[in-house]
Length: 389
Ligand SMILES: Cc1cc2nc3c(=O)[nH]c(=O)nc-3n(C[C@H](O)[C@H](O)[C@H](O)COP(=O)(O)OP(=O)(O)OC[C@H]3O[C@@H](n4cnc5c(N)ncnc54)[C@H](O)[C@@H]3O)c2cc1C
Image (cartoon, rainbow, N blue to C red; front, top):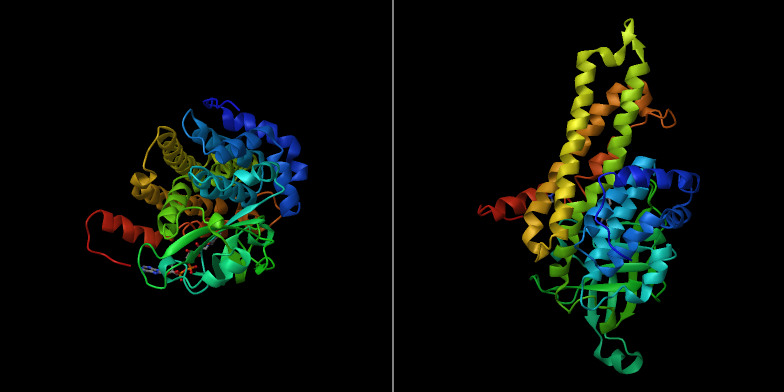
């Protein structure tokens, strides 16, 4: 597939392309909605680019623009988040590796029959990966018996898409000591003996994608399941998180656009105190705030995409900037939702009013992909402060 530099109106064009498919997406089971979403040509193009690990030529910027268009069309936030997280947080980082661990699965990932998840967090340690308990222990004896090199045991929790996932990118300690080379990254099929996916958690944010836990109970793994060399898991995690922090908030761009359109329509029509609500300068200025926030988030996210396309290597050189973008966009998203909500009055809290605002999903943005506070600590450290977690 040829990579075409995105035209300025890609999001608008994609929104039109997605609109006819909405009945097969909104309110549907996650996997059915996912397959329908991936059947849309622009989205399929993004999947193909990310699975080739293609950067440059506007591929990453185009992916952001397509995801913005998907959100503008009215695809629910949870699905936009799932798409963004899989494309930027898993597929692109894995596909840039020399081992090309996703190559055997490209067809299934492209048509949506296979779904990925990124299983890092554990109940006992989210912010501190080096405290993880999930371990992949060398099994020298069993290697003679059945070819296994490792036995993985442990439990991951709060993992997006886990209950539906077919392939699990997971991290486990391959050394008991606490040091930067203690972790390794594996790609494990969910149907392997000893892997159990939980039922979906009852969550209140990004509800259209399930979240759950994964148990590894004496799961056999070989060298071929390692996505990078043994002991380089933390370094690879730095890559997936930099991609995520830089670009994950693209999931919200289309929703912001759609909210502003709804706000403007509502305020023009709504009559209070003998006139249109939108004619009140105080009310109107809040709409300007929404547009300003959207402009800021959009500018930051697209800038990150262009820098990656321009060959920002190593990507680790962008990690502090990506952390700043993530914090800034997460704060902005929350401010956006809390500014928009009162403009709709009571309708903001009525699920089927058409003006429902989901501030809880915005709160989640300060938690996933590295909590904002932990990112603040690493930014301060980068600036030279002697601060530790
Ligand atoms: C919507 C959503 C999707 C998610 N998807 C995934 C996924 O796909 N895969 C996955 O592995 N995980 C996922 N997570 C989990 C997420 O990565 C973790 O919740 C996050 O890393 C925080 O870990 P924790 O919940 O254990 O909180 P804790 O680590 O217990 O932290 C709680 C609070 O304490 C603060 N804190 C902790 N230590 C320090 C310190 N030293 N200094 C200052 N403050 C500190 C944190 O900033 C945070 O505010 C998701 C979470 C959400 C909300």
